Amino acid sequence: MAYDIPPPEKRPEPGYYYHFKHDPDGPLNNYAYYIYGIGHHTEDDCRPEDAFMQVYRPLYEAYAYRNGGMFDLRPLHMFYKPATLNGKEVPRFTRVIDPEVIAQLQAIKSRLYPEPCPIGHG
Image (cartoon, rainbow, N blue to C red; front, top):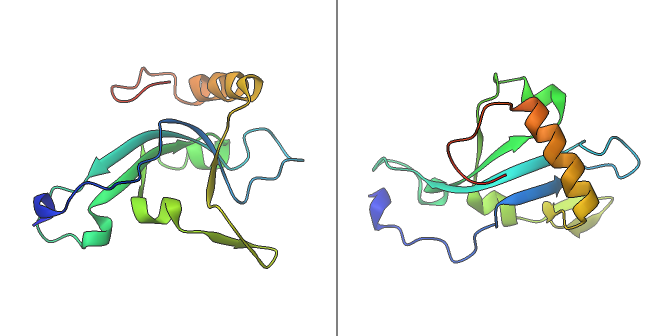
């Protein structure tokens, strides 16, 4: 039963993140995401590794419009699973901490998703 699965110990903080495919020489918002937090799968027949999902939105146009502005979900365990880039293991997501970059990503987020979000922050 999905409710019998203990909550995850590691949870990403809400905020702006870059995926490992982000190109620092490309547009500021390429492979940029806003992570709202995590959601819990409520059905009894879900796989244990899918019981907790990362709730996020992409901040680049090709994906923001793909689903009409809906939220995207990814199994939480994938958030922490390392990726391979140029033969090296790297974090799959890295939190953006530069206030100037955050301000610019926040403006992009507001433009792509103009409706107030009923969950999370930002």
